[in-house]
Image (cartoon, rainbow, N blue to C red):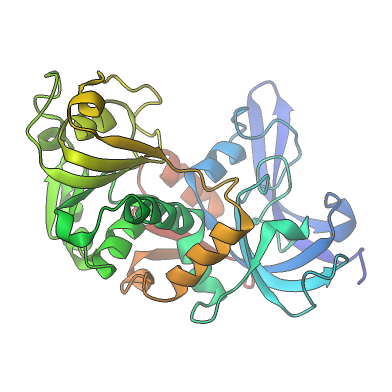
Length: 335
């Protein structure tokens, strides 16, 4: 492998305190961090964390210049460990990719081979990035409900933040798995989109949180996938049925949880934390296999907006202002 190979990447540069610029530049494989696996990236995806990294958020990235992109899918160029062979197709999500390690917004990445999983049959590289970290997180949430005994016959499942990446895919996976899904969103004009994904009912954020100042609310949900946090999660916990389960994987509303202990000690409600960043290789392979099979969203293509490296700037600003519905796939082949 020629480590002087040139490629394009989005590079974020710090120019002054709290001032950053972004541009597509030529780089070489020699510029990349150490690692035993080199992957030619075909597709990546845009997540909220990527937008934070691209704008210099210190909670995500502190070392610059830097290439964001916490997701990548592509073809193995070289693997010193022998875990993969040249030509193998792989998915890389989580760990340090796109945070302090140059990520998927470049046409090549160099990483530890333990970060990669084989692309399962039934899923294309583009489809894997239509899912990406959002899909992995959504699937881990559904798996958490399933393993906790929340089966489709138990009743309605609520998904909050349902028009976002994780929420959209969670709605689709749950519907495909036979659950009756209610989608909650602040974008009620997207009701048709959510019903196409499989939601049987769509409710507004205000309806969900109405009366949430009370110690408990009327029991309704058998389980829930929450990606919002804050007062929304508190309201969900107060309205889950006895023995119900809520998964928590986001904080777009707030990292704080203003809730009392009543849902837990009077109704036996369980709150499961979901983390896709450090999930084990074994669980990743299991979840990706399910996403390539029975859990593959029927409307996956309809969730996706595609852009090139050059088109990322507009998309970064859009996602920061809450203007993205579904998923953004970044095509590195046409950049």
